[in-house]
Each structure stands twice: as C-alpha cells, then as structure tokens.
Length: 249
Image 1 (tube, rainbow, N blue to C red):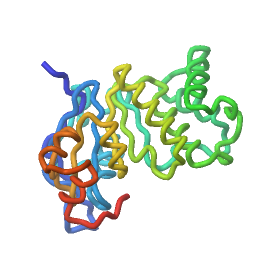
Image 2: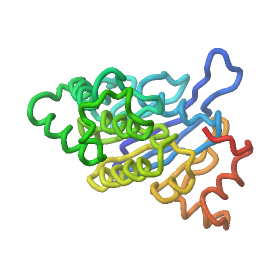
Image 3: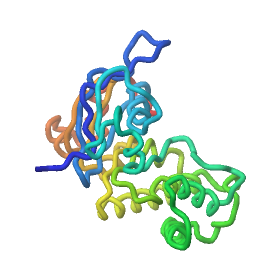
C-alpha cells in the first residue's frame, strides 16, 4: 500500500472580508517520496493552502492529515514532522547566517556539536560557508533564499513545504536551491511546493495540481497533462486551463 504523507479532504477556506471562498472543496494526497507542485494564478489559493498546511491558518471546513496525524488533534506532533519554508524571509537580519540557523535549530531542541556540524555542512552545500558569519541584512535575495531553505530542513523533516522558494532569485541561486531539493528528495524527503515557474515545475515535480480561484482544475504528472491536452509543455497546459490572465504571483 502506498503511504500518503499528506491527505487533504474537502478543504474550504473563506475569509471574513470576502464573499467568495479562497478554497472550495479541495481534495488531494501526496505520496511518500513525492515532489508535488501546486500551480495557479494570482488569487488561485496557493498561499492560502500552504498557510493552512503549515499551521498558520485554520480552514473553514474540511480536514487534512500529515504523516497520518490529524491537524485538529495532533498539531504539536505534526510540527516535528514538517519543514516550513515560507515565501517571506523567516530570518533575523541583524544576526549572521550561522546565528540564524543555530536559532532555528534550537526551536527543535537541536544543540551541541552535532547541530554545529550539520549547519557547517549545510552552509557548504549551498555555497555560503565563506559568509557564514556575515549578517543577513547584507545578503542578496538569492543568498537569503538559500538560508531560508536551510532554516526549514535542519531537523530533517519528513515533509517539506515551500511557498515560492525560487521567487526573485538569480539564476545561480535558483539552480543551487533546486539541485539541493532534488538531493533531499532522493534521500527520502517528500516535497510540496508552489511555483509560478512552469518549466521548473515540469522538470522538478512528479505530480502537479492546478488551482483556479480556489477550485482544483486538474491533477496529474506534468507529462500526463501535456499529453492529455496535446500541448507542447506545462506552460501551455496552464494557459489553456486557467480562466484568468497570466498574472503570476
């Protein structure tokens, strides 16, 4: 039997100030070891979905489990199973890269020589060892994205949630981030991520779903969607399926 690390069932979200649902009757699952992409235009519901799964927002209705744990009853246990990499930088600008990572590691009870070595290796892996003792406020956007990623994986989560992990980064940082994510996935980490880069999603994801105004339009492998619509690539699929203009987040 295939193990599901994320299972979402009939999820709804409605904000008080809005007449429309941000998410409507959304159901899907993610298999262990899978890279799963959530794609959509501005206002499609991607960030709302990620905020709910990351524990920062309560759904209006519906249910979801992570690693078989219910968000309603076992939220604290889920916290140690997941890694969270938000779109906004979750970093302290006046601390160095190393100090930031030690702080985030301490939130999971990780201290001492072992975590020091883990942080050292992680910084080397993303090409930032030489600036480990430089304050974050002096980092470029791409460098901050790399540290943002490391802060979410130091405790070796089973499932990693990433909201637009390569938005606004230079080409070099983008390749470093995606290559490292592929490496983590090969080591067994499941990945759920949102992106507006269609070629990136086509190359990186095992499966994707496309949201449009809170509603699930389709879910399949990138190649399956391309074949179904007789399209050239995932971007063409996306353009043909979404009813909004291509105003990416």
